[in-house]
Image 1 (cartoon, rainbow, N blue to C red):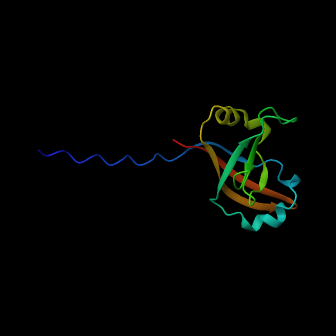
Image 2 (cartoon, rainbow, N blue to C red):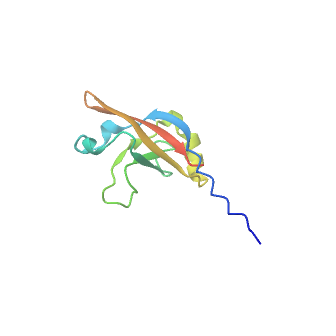
Image 3 (cartoon, rainbow, N blue to C red):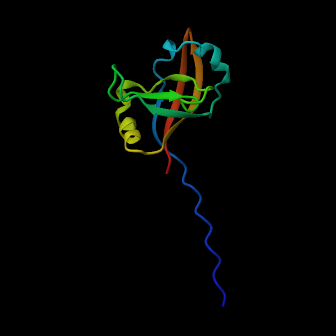
Length: 120
């Protein structure tokens, strides 16, 4: 009796881009100028909710590594005017990450352009 070969798993769908934005607050991060050379375009970044923020009910931090990793650097935050949907998705347990698209210095401000991604 011949059995059909099992179907190959479907390739994973590429992530859905939810948001393109600048990382807010980079000028307030100590030692970011020292760390910046290690940031690479295309690098994966992690997003973490800061539910107890005194400044923003929907605060979402942008990190280089998991917060418990000694190599982690907090780069800043998603912009306050654009973070509520991402915060709600993170709170609901969705897999949301980010990717660095561009970096550049403008005087003493590190301009970090990212894409926020929903894994499908």
